[in-house]
Each structure stands twice: as C-alpha cells, then as structure tokens.
Length: 266
Image 1 (cartoon, one colour):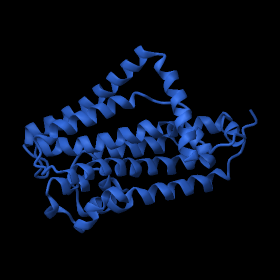
Image 2 (cartoon, helix red, strand yellow):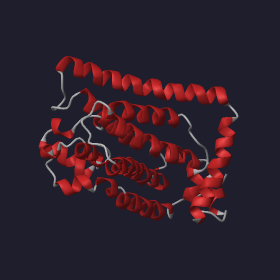
Image 3 (tube, one colour):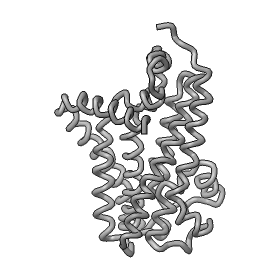
Image 4 (spheres, one colour):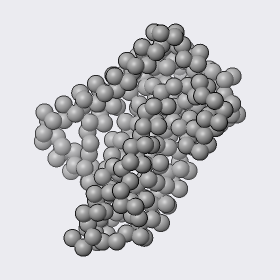
C-alpha cells in the first residue's frame, strides 16, 4: 500500500504536468491512434487478399489484435519510463532516488507519464468493442471477467520483459535496442494466431518468449478454438495468471542488478 500510495502521488503530479500542454497531448493521442490504424490496415489488406489467416477471419483477427493492443497500452501507460532508464542512470538522476524514502523503481515509474499511450488504449478498447460483435464469443459475466484479467495478465507479461531488460542498464548502460526489439516482436507477431508458425517458433513464442500468453491463448479460449492449441487447454484458461510469476522474477532481477549501479558523479 505504501508503494501504491507513492506511485499514485508521483503519477498524479506527472499527469498534472502533462495536462498543462493539452494541444501536445491531443496530438500524441491522435498519433498513437493513427499508428495503430496503419497496423490494422495492413492486417485487413492481408485478409482481403487471402480471406483468412490460419483459419481466422477478420472479426477473430481484430479481436486478437484488440487484446494485444489493449494489454500493450496498459503496460506502456504504467511502465513507459522504463524506456528512459538508460538516461536516468547515465546522467546520475538515479542518485536522487537512492536518498529518498521511497522505492527507486517506483520513483522511476512515476517520473513522468507518456499520455500518448491513451491513444493505444482507446484504439484497443474500441477495436475490442467492435470485434466483439463480429467474433464468435459467447459473452457472459465470466467471459468478460476473463477478458479483463487476460488484458491485465498480458500487460504483466510484456512489462516483465521490459523490466528485466531495464535491469541490464545498471551494467550495460544502453538497453534501448533490447527494449525496442522486445516491442517489435510483440507488434510483429502478437497480432496473428501462432498456428501460422512452425512448431519450433510456436514453442519459442510460448515458453521462451511468452508472447502467446498476452493475447493468443486467451483469445483462443474466448473464441472457442481450443482444438488448434498445441498446449493443454488448462494452460490457455490459466493464461491471465501467468504474468504474475514473470513480473516477480523481473523485479527480483532488477533489484539484483541495481547493486551494480555506479554513480556518474553528477
């Protein structure tokens, strides 16, 4: 609760700061929406040409895309400052975090807000709402609750990889290429059903790089496509809970790596 209160106070101040520049905020949100619209247009063009992707139609692909995008937006809205950890460490700003009575990681996460993520969030939620009417989902309170938990779990999975990569900054100093590579994998492969890939790629994107748990597995369960899974169905239903372990491991890795921090002397 102490961590939550600290994070809330920091992000509230950061929000007020960002909201002072309303024009810039609106432009960033529109930019986020436009960027995601381009990605969706590409998927639509592929479907127009081939009809389906791995047996998934437009409504199902849009539903999968919406889940992945919404999870990414939640992660980026809360953890966007992980992108800037290299500068925080190299420029000595991290020194100030160490002498304050609050978690250094919480101070980093509450440092600023990138409200352009609201564009991704609005786009993802809108796409999910539209696709829900086209995709064959048997909606019920339980199914809706599962969807919400799946989005939060997906955000934890992606956030865990970004947090672990950020922990490397204490030794490597420059980790932006690693984090952009992680983001690229999610963006390039997370919008498609994994059945279109070979067995080796499916295994890697499930157990080595846990992309499948962000959207594919929970979407497969909600769309009643369990028969195409190469993993047990219980793993699909349990996908929303999978993110808890990686985020804990990533946090412990961050704490371990932070012991190697060397002040820049600024």
